[in-house]
Image: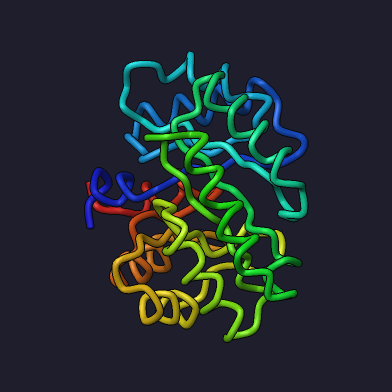
Length: 217
């Protein structure tokens, strides 16, 4: 897989609490050079990143309810609304993990549906945090994401384990048509290509540059 092709799958991610403006500028410069699918950054830097890559067609993704997912729906809606107003084109929202474990599936679906309605045509990816879920809970989460109308399911924040082949296969079995973002622990070209081979739509990684530079010209 050549550099351009692999880059088109990557959400180049910088969510460290120490990230500063120079780090965001460097990430966006790389995004413009390599043509990543999107940059994924903390909400504070959305407006800055949107200015840096304006007109490029590269997505500006940010996080909502991050990293625990335990915010109230009202807070998540406010976060999403503010992010879009500042230039975000994609929202990566952490699902309410505790509500899922309590089998409050209607609440979980309503939360996802409400945020999707709030951001309209912008892309909503729902992070289910697979590392914290049982197999049954992963299936329940996948079906909730699909039924609530999100655009994509995302495996992990990276703070509680990462993407695994087994989890991607489980998600595909539960909801074959649902787009998947594999995220967490994907640090080299071989791993990225393995997940792409499984049919994922996006790869979330803080090692985007290293992955692209390992690819063929």
